[in-house]
Image 1 (cartoon, rainbow, N blue to C red):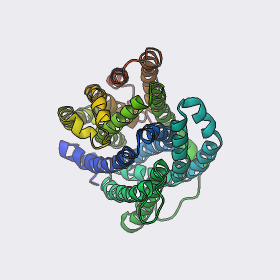
Image 2 (tube, one colour):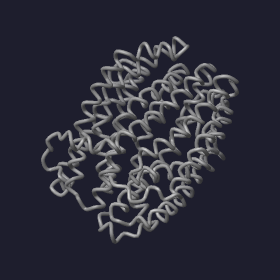
Image 3 (cartoon, rainbow, N blue to C red):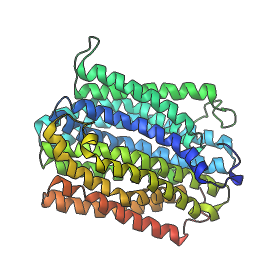
Image 4 (cartoon, rainbow, N blue to C red):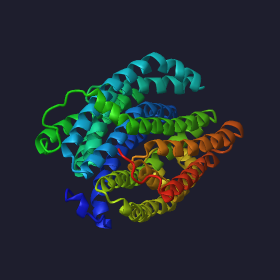
Length: 448
């Protein structure tokens, strides 16, 4: 899909051609979390519950780099739409250098401070030990993960999204093999449990990076996009990227941090409630990755279409993406609600745990009536280059979300199913804020 952006009408077919490779890649990436949860759900409830805390804790740190790459993706999309193709490579190289340095800093800081932080955040000794073990072995893989983020930003920003499908298949296959060997102990390896899940995921990140490097060297038009020779680090280029990238960094970190707060509140309700929430989080991840494919497509196409000088087509593009998103996501929501036990059985074989998780899963699924619209519109706001505004809008929604969680989970300590209604509150707030901003037209004529 590399026809001239200026001639593109963005029909449903063209939107789907960009979205479906992203969707498949996200399905494959979600399989990594599904694999970890499914395997650990057969080890024990402590490991299953600890992985909820540990994975979200890791994601908070990961989102620092991932958020930066989303900002870089927006800039690459704008340059691609403007047909300044070699400058997309310049953004890629400088972003890659920045993320490599950032990963080393984060890993070092985590090793120094994570034990102290986890001790204050987690009340259960068993959960603490298991969570810390996962984090310590998962963090080294962040070097590979951050590099992979920049490759993903480049391929999405230039709408070469089919590459993501192949990469994700390789990554998931590697993760399944490594986890099966290391969690349960096969081929002479010791059974490492939750530590094995962390090591396996880190090794899968390395395999993913090797694939991207090899694919780019052999299949990408390196001369056209300025990837033929590594660019010299340019501090002025990085500074020019920061007005967009810094806000997407902050926004993603704060966004996932509220998830960590939610799970820490849930942890104080007991190990069973935490195990239930981890299962529901994983099921939600299946719906989230479908939605994320369309939201990410919305962001990059909005950026491309504005770069091509077609601001008048932005709102009609968003409407088309919303229709596709609702049609596909809500079909899966209906399926999950009709067969909840079958879906939950993917993650655990503990009978009473499966039964206890059903109400929470139904509540979570119903939130997607609002979440679909909220996320597509939010990514549309980011795609316009108004990342500072997008941050402010989500921050306002997250304040409301956190207050609601504090009341119903932290203070009232209501049933875990009721606690999941916090997703409705967050989505509604974000939907209202983003819709109002897009209707205002304040995003027009913004330079990136």
